Image (cartoon, rainbow, N blue to C red):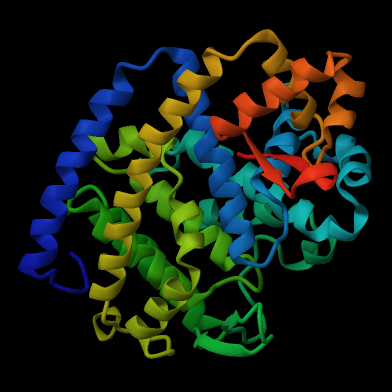
Length: 375
């Protein structure tokens, strides 16, 4: 059972949201395979980018898409060590930590997407394994990858504008309290996720209690968001689990990051509670209801974008591929003419088409104008 009783208002909103799940599921079920893959990749890349940027990584979705393309060339998810030098040379070594976080998050989410059913019932060993994969490419974190924390830690929100820090949550102390809380959480989750009628509420409580425990020294936020997605996959609701591969939930968490942290604080008062009924979880339930609804709206937008992509001319595709091979660059018309060897007028027409259809963004005016890829 949940640790809180949802209000009638929440239940009515969940019923309305369920109708949207069913509608979206039926729309996605009819998709051609290529379009389904396109939407799934958008969701994966967006979730990786958003989840890592929430924790202050700096890579854009365009750069993450390029990394994913590089690592998929040989069909191996774990090819990063072979490609590390090439990727860092391309994206600059001063962002090495961000690249490592992105690659680790990519591996965890890939596992969640591909093996969710095999990971049920959930175990602490699975959670530890996912945490190990999350940090496996960051050598400085090797000593605590996959192991519960050995020193106190706190959830802190940092203002990008002022640098001011605010404690969002003072979690469980390391040792027996953390290990006991994790054992109880996993047991509760396995007994609840397929029994309660509202999976979204179970997932919300699950991720909040995980974050309140904050069991690992580092990476709790990224892993918690991955576990939220895992909970949706492990639902008995075929409509919700069926649409989960195609929705970028973390994209909308990132867009509402200050509210996200404020809600986490409101639910707990900033303190871990051994008794979960002491939390006030209704605000978080509302946050995830709104987040899911916003995520569903992406499906129609990216279906339109996919349709536009299929109608692009050969020259427009050549120009677009020029950007995809250089995600870190903002290119001038002259740069594109040189790389594609297309006539300037053809390039200009292609750029106009790609900008109007939201594949590219124009930055600046006149001679100083540049174009940038839009994910």
